[in-house]
Length: 92
Image (tube, rainbow, N blue to C red):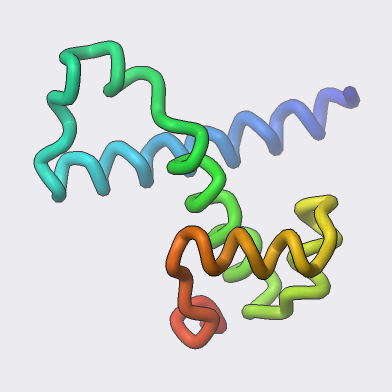
C-alpha cells in the first residue's frame, strides 16, 4: 500500500474514532466496561460513520459511494437501512 494511501486511511480512521467518541459521550455510553470499550469501538459504529462520510462526500450519490466503498449498490442499500440513515440529511 503506497504511503499516501496509508496516510489517507489514518486520517479517515481518526475522523471515525473522533465521531464515535463524541456520540458515546453525548449518549452517556462512554463508560461501558471501562476503558476497553472506549478504546475499541464496535465494527458497526465504524461502518456507520464511514458510510455516512462517503455518502456526504458523494452528496448522496449511492452508485458513486458504492464504488468508493467497493461494495455492490444493493449492499450499500442494506447498510443504509441497517444504520437507519436518511439520504436527504447526507446530501449536503
